[in-house]
Image 1: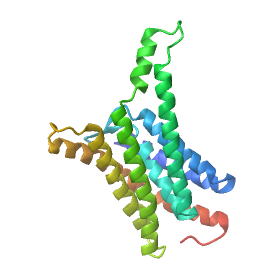
Image 2: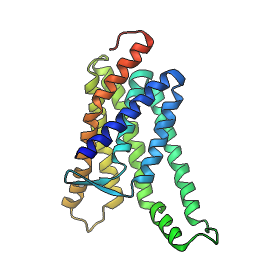
Image 3: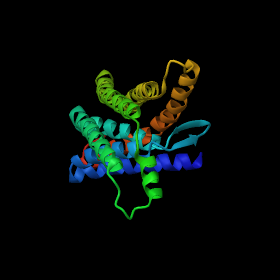
Length: 233
């Protein structure tokens, strides 16, 4: 429990700090970090961890933090920058998956041990079904997050940052989890109760992270306003 909170808070803090720094050196930095986190989440997702009584991929915090980046980009720089980040993450994932597939299938040098080769393949090999499920869930949920955040910002007239932050992220995470778990693991013989339990377990963890990121988006907007010498909304 404590480790989970420390990991989540440190990741969200680092992500927020990165976006704030990007104000000075170029917003492209934030988009690049976003794409890197998407690739990283694909690489570390193979290990399952236990949070509370729920099981989730080890990438759950890293991946969830990307929704904070798009929300901050939407709030401070506009929908188009957030959309570009999603596109960058999509192509970065495709490139990473192709490169990994080539590396896994490439014959190792003669002096490399069979044990190392087997371990390498076990870590980096990904089934096509998991890959396709991940890509579909990513592009739909992340695109929804960008447009939902912009929608709620319009509805509230730019007020209630906490509302648009959570309304967009919580729904987007539910979409992501439902699509990925269903496409990746469902089969005609699987009881619906088991499928629902898998979706619920991962979503509860993502929901907790989404609620934790609210203070960080306020910190980002306040710092951004201070750097620009304007009053925060």
